[in-house]
Each structure stands twice: as structure tokens, then as C-alpha cells.
Length: 209
Image (cartoon, rainbow, N blue to C red; front, side, top):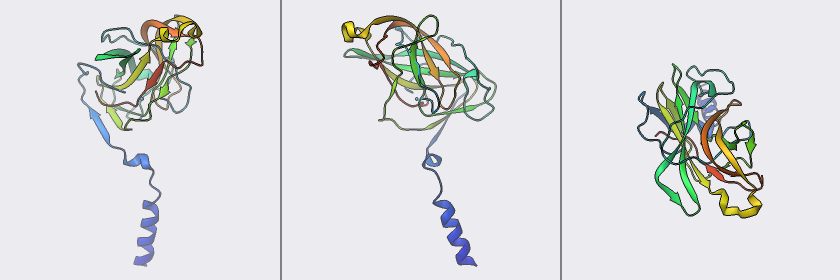
């Protein structure tokens, strides 16, 4: 009987999923003084827009979704903004952060990539959604009320692509939290490409600020 029990226990251990071993980070209840790097939804296609300069924390509007109660963070309990990293300029692009702040009354968890795409003033998608940066560490970030998590996004200048870009004014970045079909829009006045073959954003996973 002891041998059988030991074999059953070993079999159960072998069924554990890799994500169960991912490290977990708890964010303090105080909002971060300066945003850092950040993640894409498992369900919907992503939406996004290049960020304006500075570290503005602009409120975003949720388009639906249930409020989280200690589980995964949902759009309805979050506020989104885009912040430029200090010294984030690169050749033809800028590194910024997608910042999601928990404005709800309960802690929730963000794990994975956000979905991003540019939108115009009417909240219609402009161009291609963001691609995922594979060279990042996947962590689970617990966000207390008033706290935040960040995902780094590299935004390429639309003007780099000339006439093929079909330059279009952008009003913001649509943000889907991981595993959520509802979204927020982080205001950001910039230029995007109407050409859906041109990808202007590459995003990482959510991390603690």
C-alpha cells in the first residue's frame, strides 16, 4: 500500500503546469512614483498607439468586464496610461511603459502580455496590433488597490516608413489586460500607419514597477 501511495503522489506531481512555478510579486498599495516596464491578452486581438512625450498618467475608459475580486485584474477596475521611460529614445523608436493602476477596492493579479493597438479619435483601430517581445520573463504581479504594474513597449516612428505607411493621426492606445475581452484606452496623441502590414509596437509582459 505504501508503494502504491508513493507512485500516485509522483504521478500527480508530474501533472503540474509550468506556469504554477512562476514567481509572484506583490506591489505595495502606494502608486508607483515612476512607471517601469510591462505584457498581451490570451483572447482578443490587441490594439495600440505611440505615446506622447513625458510621464503623463492619463485615465482610460473601460469598455466592459467584471470587476476583479482578488483574481485576475479586469479592465473595469483598472486605469491605463502611457509613460515615456527616461532616456528611452532609440534609433527610429522610443521605449515607453504601459501602466495599469488598480483603482478598485481589492487586490488583483496581472500575468502575461497586454493586447495593444492604436486607435483614432473614434476609438477605431489604426493599423496592426502590437507584437510580443519573446525575450522577457513571465511573472505574476499582485497589484494592491492604488498600486500599478507596467509593461514595456517599443514604439517605432511611423514616419520611418514613408508613403507606404499611409500616415494617420492616432488618439490613444487600446489596452487589453491579459485574459480579458474588455479594454481600456490610454490617451496618446501621435501618428500611426493605416497600412496593416506595418507593425509599430512591440510589447513585453507585466512587471512590478
